[in-house]
Image (cartoon, rainbow, N blue to C red; front, side, top):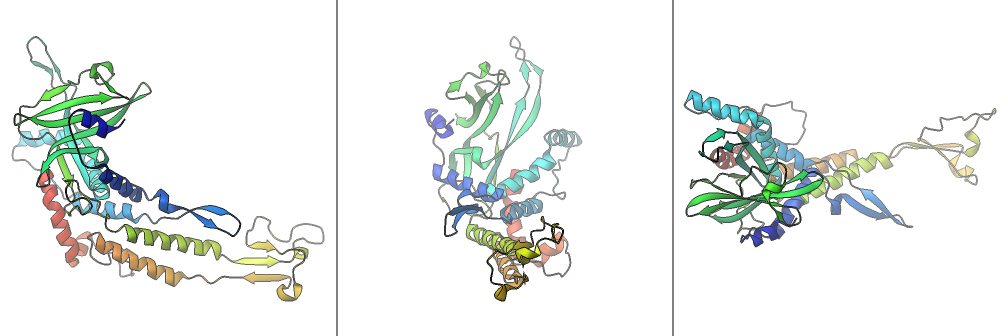
Length: 380
């Protein structure tokens, strides 16, 4: 289902497709597997060999750490009234808020933007009296950047927006598009359902009670956009955020190349013992060495005995210090580029420090944390 085409048919335009391709690239780095980088070929003089590059997955780690700094046990949503507090606490609990809020902050760091869309599920109304028979329940949809389509915005604030999701019903995959638009200064929420083309909501199980249009009667949006408080230098004209590591891709590449080289160093440089063929068996024909032990390697029948001898040990020296320094240097660069200041990921054996000590000693991280909290507080 082409969501952009569906929105255009509904009369809407959104952020350019190139930006969503960038979101896809950030998502691949977050997963730690970028096809055109981690999969590569090597010519061995005879043929091209398919290889896979090891990844240290630092993009994921950076996102986890920012999520833990922004949404942790110290964050509380407090209301003045006891009744109101109990109401909100119940809704948050029913929507697994403590887990999903932290997860959303991680996805925000990875993809630049997330959204929270509260919806009423299971409400029923008496058609004769228009009275509410069942108030239903409030469900929070946690939406990541790949499914957020801004329609109108000004000064970086998204005024109208569409949200997409997929759901499989009876072996058919449907795309559900919810459009939040202004109509006469108040928000309407339009609901559209597609397989290859748009289908009536009433024709699909689970969507029968969803109305085509909901008139909210409110001038306040029924969605909240959450993004990192760093300038979008990929496309300055759109209101979406960028990944925390968007400008550190080269460093991520270099780290994975160094880590992959480090792994290969141990693989290719492992100890080997070259053994003359006549030394492989005892007088009774039993094997001298364990045949499953890969350290032993049989020499060819015509080997040069004057050069090799019956047994020759080869123990390659490993470039541990050089690899370790290169990786530590680039961890330092990554830490700086991602707003942590320097040496967040550098292990120096100085002992563990608390999060409060780390932040208080690192003015760069503290300032960046406060900067991101400016948007997050408004979101909450």
